[in-house]
Image 1 (tube, rainbow, N blue to C red):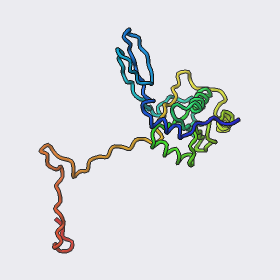
Image 2: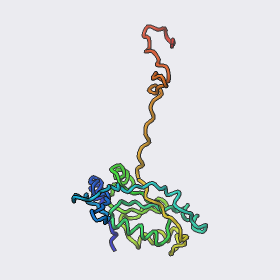
Image 3: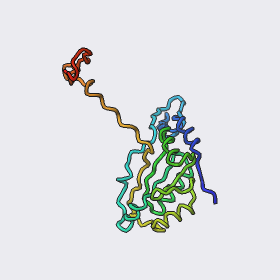
Length: 212
């Protein structure tokens, strides 16, 4: 049985078409509300752009794992690499949830994510990818191979997660870099003057070792 796959090039093509990701709320003249991913253009409609889905929840706060499962999750953590609008990725996530396997979902949604994924997957451009305790399976969703790897790691055949368990939301594979802080010399006080004194340029005629 061949694994179900999704080419990374297709994911990148979707990323370069942001309009396809937007969701629009349309209120017609009769008050009827619809949602669409195609920009509406009919007269008399009130259109609200809902924006692009975001991933903000951390996998570390996704729920409480039962005591008997916690050691397996700690020793054999499961990470799945996915991308939106990928049927094979969706099937892989459904498989993990049905079996009750806590996981971290690293999603590829930006060009930086694509670059990072190629490093992780040794240059592969196929999704999804599952790793168990850092060991990579063959790329693509293969229920048999995934099930065997999880069983070998000690995950139960059937879910023992509580009914209210919340799985981790996708998180970017390549987090956005932190904003750089302004240097101390550029910071200014309330008077508009530099917060720290500006040192004079070095005097080439000063004796050796001499400093201001």
